Structure formats: structure tokens, C-alpha cells
Amino acid sequence: MQASTDLSIEGKQTAAPALAVAARGVSLTFETSDGQVEALSGIDLQVKAGDFVSFIGPSGCGKTTLLRVIADLEQPTAGTVLVNGVRPEEARLKRHYGYIFQAPALYPWRTIERNVMLPLEIMGFSPDERRARAERYLKLVNLGGFERKFPWQLSGGMQQRASIARALSFDPALLLMDEPFGALDEIVRDHLNEQLLRLWNQTGKTVVFVTHSIPEAVFLSTRIVVMSPRPGRIIDVIPCDFPRDRTLEIRETPEFLKIAQRVRMGLRSGHSYDE
Amino acid sequence: MTSSALEIDPEHTASSRKPRSIWHHPWIADRAPVVVVVAALIVVWYVAAIAMNMSLVRDAFEREETVYTVSDLIEGTLNAERPLVAAPHQVVSQFVDSVFDYPPDSPRSLVYHGFVTLSATVVGFLLGTAFGIILAVLIVHMRTLEKSLLPWIICSQMVPILAVAPIIIVVLGALGLRGLLPKSIISAYLCFFPVAIGMVKGLTSPDPIQRDLMRTWSATRAQVFWKLRCPSSVPFLFASLKVAVTISLIGAIVGELPTGAQAGIGARLLAGSYYGQTLQIWAALFAAALMAAVLVGIVGFAERWTLRRMGARP
Image 1 (tube, each protein chain N blue to C red):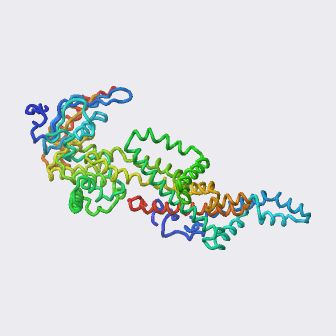
Image 2 (image 1 turned 90 degrees about the vertical axis):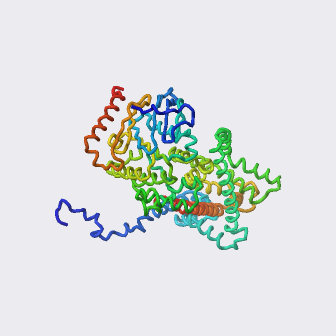
Image 3 (image 1 turned 45 degrees about the horizontal axis):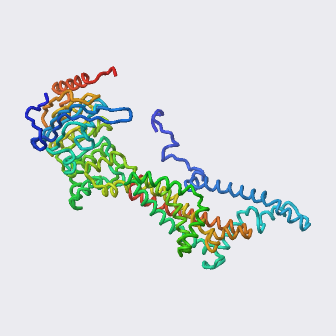
């Protein structure tokens, strides 16, 4: 199921460049005041460059933690992770990825344009380049004309689009998205899902996407990683081979329902409801 | 309006609004509560002045063995030369006299004394604010400093300033520092505290997500400070500054007391109490209150201006 046969990550640099993320035996145990919490246990995972991979699982199954390990926001207690063939810290320092959080987290004192330009300022782009990129990526997420607005003047969906533009602005090869549409209503979410697919198709980026919505996962992904809680483990990796330019209509097709059913079965097997 | 079920309450539609009474005019509705409270305070003040000065005036009449009526008595209580409680109109006229009747460089002019206190206040406020911000930045960036410095900072504020002020004046005087600076230092000693506490809170106020974002961009410590911590702390800074500016005025006035009352609002208060000049004390208090109001007003204006430029909701 997990196509790990052709993989050889014994040393540190031997990962094939075509792998955006390669995790092997990753475990993470948090020390909390009431003992140890095993957040991740023995995670083996490969994400091919250009793929759209979703992590799905109930709350507390460690999917966000896994994403944070990839982003070097958490350190695994065991195992190795390679991002674009290098350690997560190096990938972070080289700005290989853009991270999109659950909340838009725009800085309220900056206009939308200046929010998008913030990472570019930090990375030392020239002022002209910053402005040009902000304009380009705001257009890409359909926010042209909102450059001078402050975040509170935009709806939640528009704010999240601005945060996507911000993550795209420095052109990372990998997008890490942590339930980016979780706080939005379903109508806005459908719309943004379509936009995100179009974006992914246009830019050819690798996307790692955390969600707890089955239809969202099946609609967006090329592969779905089903996780179970306590400790967070991968219980199934489901290929999802719809064409890249899929539309919302595929959600009515039998194939779609079959994959959704398999995801649901996976979630059920991994989660004991008696707890 | 067609169907009754859909009819909108005419009270709430703009077109059919009735001409409202004068009391609902926004200009009056905004100010009426303030005016009423002030008027009530003045009434209470007058009643208190009459009651408190009554025995004083009655004794004076009886000592001179003159015949007096109730209205004589009341008139006396409101115009006593050295009343226990000065009546509002006496305070106002004393205030107006000492502001306008003397040239601003005369030692009898409140403008002169006010300016002396104001310059010590402003210098002290600027010193204290700078010191408070520097302390906060150090505390936020060095966790050990929080444990080692914070208790001292808090202790510094538990010592009564009236006890510390003479020591500071004497020590600085021995070092050859007189006049404005010692007073400013006492003022700064009081006002750095709210700024330091407010700025520690402000500089640590960014969300975990906002800090994580900076980390994903591999921002340096300096970048996190200037682009995230500083802007986040601005609302906290202004809240602290409003407290600090009034405290620094109090510090400047207290600093004027041990110097032998040469000049300043504090000197006026001290001289007034030496010579039983109640009206002079009241007028000086009035001047201090006015200065405090103006200073807070200026900080408030700066706050609104800055926060509007930082995209605050109107």
C-alpha cells in the first residue's frame, strides 16, 4: 500500500529529488504535566513532487503535528524526515515551503498588500519585486483591487485567500496547509476548494493538506493519508486518481463515493468509539 | 406599505422619521450626561462649602458682636478669605486672577509655575518612557532578567515617593544637579513602571500562529522584533502612556516639595499651606488638574492618530 520499496533513505542525501517529503519511522512524544503523550508513532510516508496529499483523521490524531514536523515547527523524538531531500530545518532556512494555518493570521496593522509583501521583506526582495509579486499573487487568488484594504475589512474566506497569496509570494515548491478552510462555511469552502485545485494545477506545486472533511479530502487529493489517534499512526494511503482539472461535479460519481467510503472505513477501523 | 404582515415599524424607517425633540439632537444627547454630572457636583460643592465654613463665619460674626441674618451667614461662607472649603466661584476667580493678572514670568503667575512643573513633567515622562521601553525589551529578550529585574521594579514602586523624593534631591544636589533634572528623575522614577509592565505585555502579545509564521519564513530575532513584536505592542504602549503621563505630573509636583518650594505647582501648594492660603491651594490644584487633562488629551490624540494609521477599526 505504501509504495516504499524503491526508497533508500539510509544516509541523509540519498533521497530521490522527486520526493517532496520522505518520512521514515517518525515518532513524537510530548512531555506534558500529566505524563507523556504519544502524538505520532512510526510514521512512514512519501509525498511525490507535484502531488496533492491530504492527511485526514479525527481531532487529536496528530495530523497537524505531522505537518508541523515537516515544517520544522516540532522536532520528532525518533525517525528521519527529509523535505525536498534535506532536513526540515534546512528546508525551512532555504524557504522551501509555505505554511498556511487554520486561521488567516494576517497582521492586522498591515494592509492586504503589505501582508503579502511581509515574507518578501523578511527574505530581502527588492521593493519593486515585492510590489510586483504582491500584485501578481493577489490577482491569482482573485483579490485584485483589495491591496489597500485592512484585514478586518475582508470576509473570512477573502482573508484566507490573502494568506494563501502570502504563502505563494516567495514561490515555495511545497505548500503545507493546516485545515485552511476549516473555519469557513460550506459554500465558501467549495468555492475555495475549486480555486485551490486550479492554483495547484497552474503552479505545479506539491501540496500537503490537513483536513477532517472526507469530501474535501477526496475532491482535492491525488492521495489520501488516513490517520488514527493515540498514538497518531497511518492506517491507510488511498490513491485518488481523478484528472487534475476536476470539477465539483465529480462528487456525484460512483468512483468518488467509493473512495469516500474507503476513507470512512479507514477512519472507523482506526478509531474506537468506546473511549 | 402593502401587506400588513410585511409592514415595517414606521419608527425605524428613515423616510417616516418624526421630528424628534431637542433632547434627542445628537449634539445635546452626547453632552447632556456630562453637563448634568458637572452641575450636580457643583451643587454638592456649594452645599459642602456652606456647611463646612458655617461655624467659621458664625464665630467671626459673634466675635465682632454684630447682628447677622441667615443670608449674611451664607454670603459669608461663600466669600470667606481663608475658607475651609473654597466655593467654586472663588476658585475660578483666584485661578483666573493668577493666570491673567500677572505677566507669565512673575512668581505670582500660575502660568509661570505651571510651565516650571510642565517642563519637569515632560522631561520626566520622556525619560521614564524610554527607560520603561528599554527595560521591557530587555526583559522580553532575556528570560533570566525577568526573574532578576522584575521584583526590583515592583519594589521600587512600593516605597512611598514622598520618602524617596528628598533623598534623590539631596543626592543629586550633592552631585551638582539642581533645578529641572532632579524633579524629572523623580517623575521618571514613577512613570517608567506602567510603561515597562505594559510593554512587556505588549511585546509578548503576538499569537503563537503569528510567531510560527515568522519561524516558517526563517525570520531573524531582529525581524521578529521590528515587524511583529513592536507593532503588536503599540496599543499596550498607549494605554500605559496615558497612565504614565498623569503619574509623571504627580512625580514632578512631589519633586518640587522638598526643594524649599521655589517654583512650580508643588511650590504653590506648599506655600499655600504654610500661609493658610486655601484659595491659592485650590487654584494650584485646579491648574494641575487642567494640565493633567491636557496631557492625557494629547496622548489620546496621538493614540487615535497612530492606531488609525495602523488600520484600527474606526
